[in-house]
Image (cartoon, rainbow, N blue to C red; front, side, top):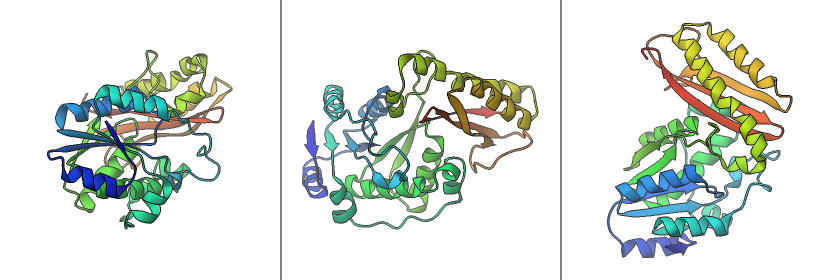
Amino acid sequence: MIILKTAQEYNAWRKQNKGSVGFVPTLGALHNGHFSLVKKSLNLCNITVVSIFLNPTQFSPNEDLESYPNTLNEDIKYLQNLGVDVLFLPNYNEMYKNVQEVSIPPSKLFDRLEGKSRPHFFYGVTTIVAKLFNVIIPTHTFFGEKDAQQLRIIKQMINTMKYPLQLIACPTVRDKNGLALSSRNHYLTETEKKIASIIYRSLKHIAVGLSKNHNIKQLKQDFCDTISINPNMSVDYISIANSDTLEEINILDNQEVLISTAVFFNAVRLIDNITFHSST
């Protein structure tokens, strides 16, 4: 594995290396969820590129940019062992001063779910991902289903901006208790992680309720009540929405539904989701 830090370095390397390129963009603090994306790329593509860039424009002033977990040395070792070809490791000046600016088409999806709580977030995400696409020029890119809204927004951006690449969605990876893996899980103790697994169980409880045609408003309230039993946990939002438009639903028709949530465990914000189809 080679480590490249500028677009110029990458372009020079790429000219000497042909074939399909799988790309996994990350913020660092890698875990088995990230590694599942990397392994998928290694299986499908001739070349696998991973980027690590802690993008400040997707954090608001009151969020955890300064304290975000930094495990770079361990990340490099894991990526080397997996057989990644290139680690792209740019700094802020490279991405925001040297790499050409991009113009991202606005989307209604930006303002829903996560966008209500973090209105800055998807503008920052789409800007940096588009810039990285323009540098790496991948044929395939890999995103996890845990970040369900992000996945849909990036897919829409690829279509709208006509990027000639294929987005591969990869399943959420969970720990033995069902907690979705996240870099922010670093903030939790092992005991807290076990407690936080109630999030996934409560999402599955909603799916069971939907299968029995229970009242959607009541299912949301039951979810909030269950989470709030633990005094250290509180619900930012719970959504039962159309899987494509992310518009909240009141009646379950024959459609795929995204059940998603953000929950605070003390100051740590955890997100998770599952999908449900009314015909199942």
